Length: 274
Image 1: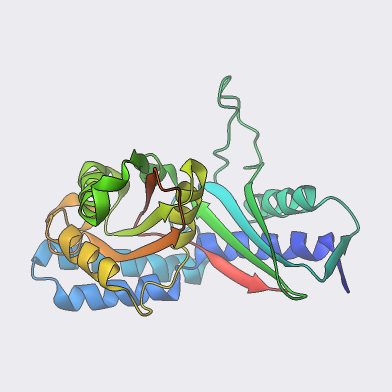
Image 2 (image 1 turned 180 degrees about the vertical axis):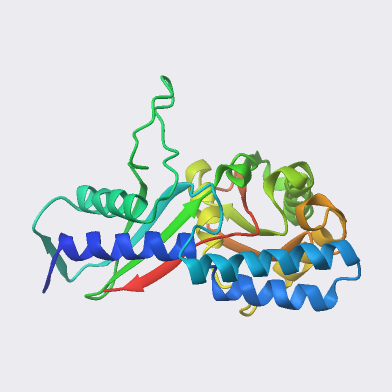
């Protein structure tokens, strides 16, 4: 059994919340550079060059990549051979978020859903905890802006909808997101499980490295999405999305839940294993 003080998780959460808000993921940056080479539309090329320059400035000057520093979504994979001590896990994570948003001078955007009163510290975070094999703890922080979050959708299909129904739904979601969700996008698709599981999978899919190996379905969806001609920030072009990631889970014989999460051109996340 390995003992881990929750203060270590607090510190790592703080570090990752700052890093993810200031430093664009390597795979996103790489995908943008490759997209410029493929893009034919001159204005679309220029927009993506500006996005890359913005990322460079944010990293150099230690500034937020985007003014919407979002909801702090924190994913914890905790080895079953770990014993946590020194406090309450959720409190430690939220303390890390509060410190990061204060130190980074990030915008506090979290409000009570009814009164709309701001918490003034960007907490509480949305925390996902999973118990896994081993004695390590993996922490992932995803600051999710709401320009793209508001465009997420879920649909409970009849099983007869099949793969074609799934594809049409994904394309529909991206088309409706349009320029409002700050393309070029990263699209996460969750298929199967239950209502909440499909949504969870679609969000987790956004964390995947989009420059890694892709499935036939992911490649086909990316190709169809880029034929929509929405283009970077909606000015048209062949780069509507940089990548598509699909995660699945077994589901009930009577159902086919499908969720689509939209990530903007500043699809931010940072990961560390303790």
